Amino acid sequence: MPIFLNVALLMLAALLAGAASLHLIPKLGRPGRALSEWLCVAPGLDLLVTYFTAAPLIVGPIVAGWTGLAAAVISQVLTVMIWTTLHGLAHPAARRGPRIVTLLNRLVGTWRNFTAVWVTALVVPVFWIVRVAELLVYPLLIWLIRFPRYRQRDWVRVSRHKFKNLVGHDLIWCLYCDWMTGVWSLGSEMLRNVESFWCPIRFDSENKCDNCHHDFPDVFKGWVPADASMEDVTDVLQEKYGDAKVNSWFGHSARLTVKGNDV
Image (cartoon, rainbow, N blue to C red; front, side):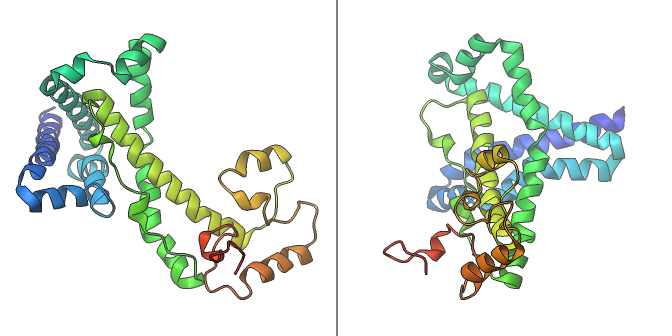
């Protein structure tokens, strides 16, 4: 038990100190504001997210095995709960006004809503791993097969902390969604290149094609039918990549001229 408490308390202190620093940094003049903005977009945001989400889950087990992992999780949960409470108390007018959490508690029940948001937190490590793949795996495909580059900060960034009267519980979970949607959208964009380059063949299930075409527009705008021939597949690959300088998915902006025609 002492080991568990020691690890949990140390991590709790480190996480709360990190959260406090985020409030302090913007108050340090122009350099502080610049640093704060850098931490809101990739790659600064990647370091910040890693500090609060992945690092405790890595350090805890290294220090104390399964006990350290449990201590890390508890410290992370307590950090969120302590910060949301303090942030709400620091903004009493917003806390008493219209709030997302208040309405949703009324719609589905307080304990259901509270439990559900913590259930979504279970997939934070998944999104973090996706982000690591975007940083470490996709660049190899740019180098090896000329996939398009992306200005990743256009996807991986957070800004909902600037929304007026978004405080405490609402703010922390909206920031989570802010980060999560950017990571997932960038991953989907990268996967469009993968699918159209290696497998431009529609699925034999029309339901799957209908469900997937929103994330993979080339399903109906370039991929060959499921009953086509391999010659059709190679013809599409030759047409789309034969003279391409960048091997992007078929609807990527890199393929469009000023007039909107394929290059």
